[in-house]
Amino acid sequence: MAPRLFYFQDGRPPTYELKKQCIAIVDQLFAGHSNGLRIQEFRLVTRELCKLPSFFTTVLFGKIDKENTGFVTRDAFIDSWLNSNMVTMDVATQAFIILKQKDQDYITKEDFKPVLRDLLDNHPGLEFLKSTPEFQERYAETVVYRIFYSLSRIGGGHLTLRELKRGNLIDALRHADDEEDINKVLRYFSYEHFYVIYCKFWELDTDHDFFIDKENLIKYGNHALTYRIVDRIFSEVPRKFTSKVEGKMGYEDFVHFILSEEDKSSEPSQEFWFRCIDLDGNGILTHNELQFFFEEQLHRMECMAQEPVLFEDILCQLIDMIGPENETFFTLKDFRRCKLSGHFFNILFNLNKFMAFESRDPFLIRQMREEPSLTDWDRFARREYIRLAMEEDGEDASNASGDVWDESLESPF
Image: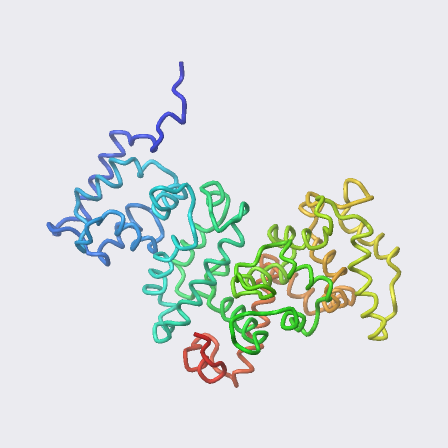
C-alpha cells in the first residue's frame, strides 16, 4: 500500500542526501562564528540557504532566537530549519509558517509588520524615507492593505495558506530583493504607487481628520462617480468599512476603493462593483438594477448637453460586451470571462471614463499597445504620479522626501 502524501503533518523529512548538503552549507555560513550569527550576518542564510526573500530575516531570526540573545547559533538553526522539516516545504508554506502566530492557521496584517520593517530598513530604494518615520508607517500600511486586497478572498483580515500560494506575493518580494529601484516593483511595493494613493486620499480629506465622507468621495476623479454608486459604497454592502465611524471611510477603506475604481478588470474589483449593483443581494444583476444606475448617468449626460443614449441601446451594448450565459441577467462568473468588465461598470456609474472609452482616447490606446503588461492600475498610478510631481514645482519625483510632504501637506499624525 502506497504511503499517503499527507501523513507527515509537519512536512516530509529531508532525505539523507539533502540533509547532508544542507549541513555542509550551514557549516560554511556559520564558520568562524562560534557564538552564532548576528541578524545582519544572518541575512545571507535567509536568502542563500533558505531561499527566502531577505526581508524575512528579521522575523525568521526572531523565531529561532527565542531568548532574544541577539545571536542564532548553528545548532539552533539546524533544529529550527532541518529537524522541523522546513527545508522540504515549498517557499509559500515556509513563509506562511514563519509569519503566522503559533496558534493560528492564517496570517494577519499585523504579522506582516516585521517584513515591512525589514524592507524599510534595508532596501536602498526606500532609504530616503528613514528621515520621515510617519511616512514609513503609512507606506508599510499601504503595502499590507494592497496585499490583502489582492490575495485575501475570504476576508476578515485573514490570509490563508491557500491564498498565499495562489498569489504572487513571494515573487514580488523576490523582485524587490533583486531590484534597487523600488518603483519598478509594481506589485505592492512601488513607492510611487503609495504616493499616489496617499495624495489622492489627502486631497479628498479636506479637514484632515483621516476620514472621508460621501461629499468628499463624490469629488473623486473630478466628480466622475454618480451619487447612487457612492451611496452604495457607503451602505457598506460591497465591503464593511474598517473605520468604525458611521458614515466615514478610513484610509484602509479608501485604498480598497481606489484600487477597485482604477482597475475594474481585477477579480477583487469585479466583486466589489458587482455587489454595489446587486441591489437585492441575490447574486445576479438584472436589467432593472442596471437601469437604476444608468438613469443618473443619462441625467448627467443631458445636463452636459451630451446626446442622450436610450437604456435599451445601452443594454444591448452591455450584453454584447459581456456575453452572459443567460441574456436576462449577469453573474459574477460572466465577468470573470470578459476583459471589458471595467467598461461595463463605467457605463453605469463613471461618466468620465465612459466618455473617454467611447471617444477612443488615442493616448490610452497607445499606452495599452506599447505596454500591454501593465494593468489599468499601473497606468493610472504612473499618470497621477507625473501630475503630482509636476504640481510639486518640478521636484525630482524619485527623490521625494519628507521636505516635499512638509511643504505641501500638514502632517495628519
